[in-house]
Every structure is written in structure tokens, then in C-alpha cells.
Length: 159
Image (cartoon, rainbow, N blue to C red):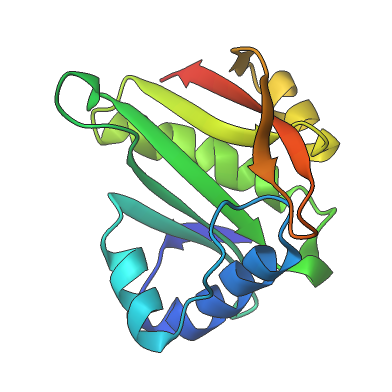
């Protein structure tokens, strides 16, 4: 498996994977799916967009961008998406580790996750194992696809 910066040739598959996570409605705050135009613009607007590729297929991706502006512009944020057939192969871990390296290389000092859904046990276990620090719990901070609210748990990691 290769981790690399995305190219325009990857965008159609990246949109499919991204939209799969959006449609599941349990991890990303976005509700609108991407199309070819909005997806191309969205991925191009990031500080870095990386993909996990194996045998010519995109299995996952991440976006990395500032979490805030000005005096907080040294903190970045990232989102990760792995194609459902490829889950369970530690691709997410590789994407997170790559994003830590890229964030550092881009001059960020911290990576902060704003809205990790509390019941996303796999992600939370991974972040704890990789040394992310939990910042507490925000009660009812995430509206699930079915309309009920779940807690969110922000995390950070020094770069």
C-alpha cells in the first residue's frame, strides 16, 4: 500500500469513499454529498489531501487543513475516510500517522479533532493508542443520521 498526495485522477474514487461516510451519517458532520465539481474544489482547497492506494485502487483518504485562523492557525484538523470493503486493515492508522507527518512538515504544531463521536470506539481506541489526548466530552454535540444526539470527544496531538 502506498500513501501519497492525491491527483485529479483519484477524485472520482475519493468522492465515492467520502460520500459513503457522509451517507452513513455516524462520523462526518457533513450532510451534503460531493459531486464531481464540489469534490474537486473541496479536495483542492485543503492544505494537503492524501490517499492510500493499493494495486491502482484508492482505499482511503484524508484531508488536512487549518483548524482555525490567525493566532490559532498553527493548529490543524484532519478527517479520514476508508472504503467500507477495506476497513479492518489498519488503513485508518496509516492515514492518521501520515497526517501527523504532513502536518508537521506543513508547519502546524498541533492536530486537533473537534468532533469524534463518543460511540466511535474504533477511532477513539486508535487515537488513544497513537498518543492523542482527549479534551473532555461535549454532551449531545453530534446529530446522528437518525436524528438522535451523541456526545463528541475532542482530541489533540502535538506534532
